[in-house]
Image (tube, rainbow, N blue to C red; front, side):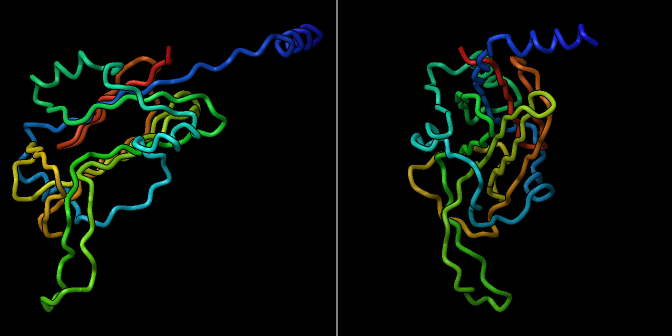
Length: 219
């Protein structure tokens, strides 16, 4: 018993070691081989954007308060994987990297696409307008939480909106919100929660979507 007490006392007297910061590198993909009816078989109706308990990666002030920072594209850590994916069945559509300072409470981040839809709400069963106002909807809207919980754990929630009348892997660009009716859009969702190994890339799969993710120690 005395030996264990001495070991415990020795451990308590050791100088505290600062926890290392994390960095997250993320790629979102579309499956070029997805079935043409994936929007109908796996999609749900589009809804107005939801308020999410997360810090937006475009909000630098909020990121700084949360101990995070968006990394420039030149420091992206999965550049080799990005180039390889461009010649594969998985079409890369978004790449991001950010740094997370160790905090007692983990904070989720929110990442969105620059492309938006301007959605016209559907009419009621009689064909008359419901009075709802059109709303803007980001094509891609996701959150990611990295935390220490029985090991390193990530929670990913991703919504992707696409036209039911276009090929699933089509990813158009536009400088202004694209007007659509609510019935033209489907919402595909990818949810995953799992333990990950530090420095090891993980792929989260879906009939259309894919996310390649790596959490590593920040330099």
